Length: 517
Image (cartoon, rainbow, N blue to C red; front, side, top):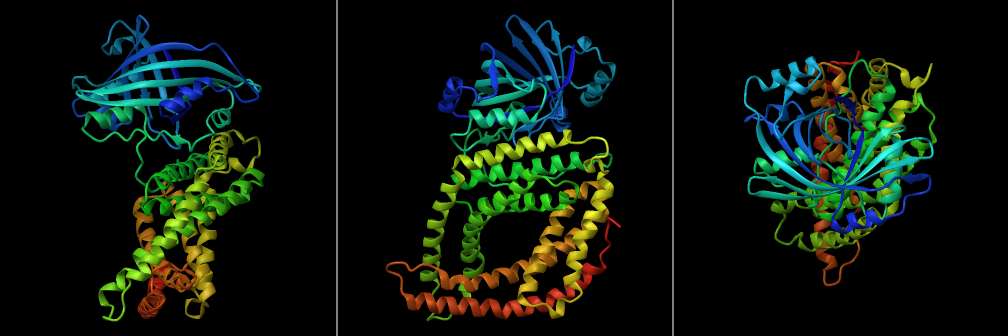
């Protein structure tokens, strides 16, 4: 029996990419052993109500040559293509689970507790043709590269599998991303968002399997930290969360016209920059500075597209219903649509560049390596609870410095307060798992209300930039000008009331319990 904690990087590939990868020469600094090709049939088991799935466990029995191997994984799930489940393997006599072969009584007790007397039944199967080889780095790191093609079978439903798995056998986990960058930098990288088990469960339940289809935009997942962690481990977790949001919404923005894609992509870059600034007091790191500069530059381009989406849907569209007969927003919306189409093309050209892959691979490698960057007396060994409290206090004080003078703020200072609120919210969301949720929730809800007001005020200020919209052939300049004037006036009247409301909302926010104190 073997008990290990795997570290794997999983990347989705189509058939052409799989074939190219098999022929691709290794990057400098890596050497390869012989490729071994095998067919693997795996049967996944669970209770009828899927108790193991709910606990983020998986149980499979796999046919490997003439043998059957039972594998139990705990802590399944992926973030930015990376998974680190605990894995227990043992040989069994046939295609059914056999807990008697497990030499860990505590694990057996946990399994029986989850199963709770229910039968284990097959949920789905995977049939995979795997080309695997051992790759060694100059620093002694050992990686298994497995190139998988095959299918998931759940009843009458089938779904193709195409994936490259980079599994760390020994050494530096950052080398996983370095190797992947050297092999897979030609096309926009798709980090796997689900394990084969997660995809199988989805298929078995009748859900649509999203293999290599355009992924729907997604918000950031919850950042889960533990009170006994140090700051370095927490930073790695937060960076991985940012990477996951950025990588996913990059593909969504490339493949879909959904405005939520660039919105969530820009948020991902902003979260990353906020995280870097929060942890800056602990390390003077040239890589983090580079990530910050790159994120700022890319986010600015993506932000131009997001601003046009907001301009059309949230600035021009709302007052349409009350426009007088001589004012029509059609020409203005057409002009915005033309600008949005041009900007989307430019953004997609940027996001498709190999440099974006390099950014993602480098960030991923940094995130997994930062946990090892601690040593005796390293600032990264600071307990995360102590550090989080100081960071939250610092962010709050910056907001408070503006809030106490809210009635006197200039337009520029209102903009700075909005940014300070956004940074505070990101910091709260980074560290909220360290505190009782009953204490965090009221503060965060009040903060969001205040942030919404400032966000609206910023959108109204942005409406002034409609004068910069390009001319569109066949569109009346007079119609555009009339609509612009009405839209700006309509929002400015509401902005005045919103600013009055902001003062009262600030007073409530200032009185909210600061849960980190």
